[in-house]
Image (cartoon, rainbow over all chains, first blue to last red; front, top):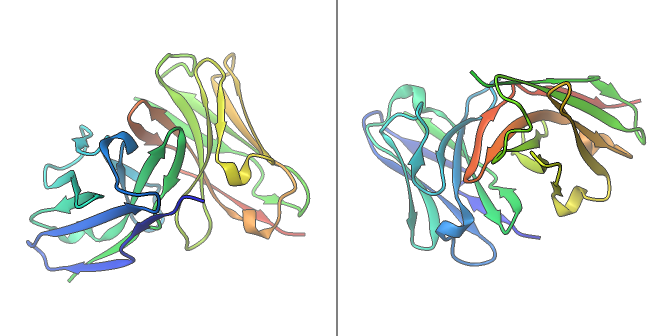
Length: 109
Length: 118
């Protein structure tokens, strides 16, 4: 059973920068895992932010960026805004089997 | 503008079959390069991939649910469906339909809550 692990919670100050990570139990995350990142606010469906490691959708603010960092997928938020407070979840593709991470609750304080 | 909308019973009895439909507007589900997916989220918990169906009808399911899941499509109605058999309370969740393109998931439905209870 493949497990995808994220930080359970992180806190960042408004205007600051924070990096969330996404790790695989099978080994280093690579571009082949096509990391996706989603933002979810209470009572709302997820909204896709990043696909295939570092590609923003047309609706994704430029302050969100994706990368690979130290064997993990990473989502970096720069110039964090109060409205960025949300749950963030990653999705990895293991040869056609897709697995979500457990999510990171980001608090902006 | 692509839109996806889930529909189906909000309450299912234990051991019965959960059935949901996703109606797609703004794009034909027969369009190549896209897969149509089901994802769920138990209350207060994280997202779980259930499976998907391609534009040509090829299905793929997550291993832990494979024995109980069937995803099918009705191109004449531009809908795709989920059936999950032998449900238990652990299957209580918000069920989302979504579009998966080659490099990831982009569009999501609003989700529908299904409770398993007698």
